[in-house]
Length: 295
Image 1: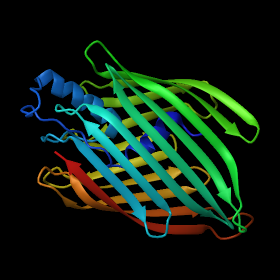
Image 2: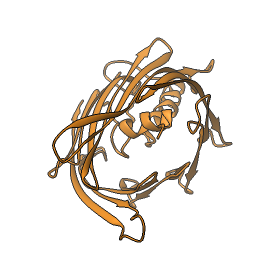
Image 3: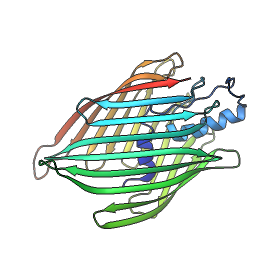
Image 4: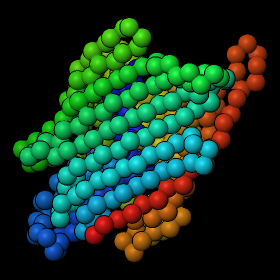
């Protein structure tokens, strides 16, 4: 299975509430113009798929951990006084039971701002551990790229190169992702075109009457978002279909005074179709999510 480049990046980056947009027109560190705020909110939406908060966040630290060791994620992000993402580093390990084996997916990702662009690197490794505890490498993917902006500073495309090792086979690819805008200046679609088979994908963004993101649809992945009367995001549900069907429901349990989630939980269900008339296997997992904010 070759992973779709930008989707892999977003899976590590987002997880619904992972990395929040931040800006304040009256930041103590710098004065942020209206145009600057608008551009930063647009760019941060591409990174995080979140609506803006009216605060002056400097750093965020996130930890996702399940007691059964299914998922472990640590993410750190830093912003400037007007909410520009300066750097982000994330590592995630997912361990899945596949019949008698343990499948391990490990992802390391970093984004760094450099002048008017953001460079990013991602490494994905898939391995399997058998009943005897012997680990075998299945796949390695490495990617590097950059998000570019138009003359107004808004991100309009990303470009990346990558290679994938599966056994002794090596595949290389180049890809370009373009971001389309609707008549309300919202991201309506992203289109990834890659030279690698099964790596091209379109993502469609849908909004409600209050301009809140309510759904993204990308290939075999659908994510939906729900909100409360106070506009705080309450939950999200993501369904991914590959050789398994994975359903992840993320629910926020507590917020700070700015409306940022501080405590959440994930319920994850993995369905594996049975072969030759055998019953489907379903594995359920529960994870806690903790957020620490620095202002």
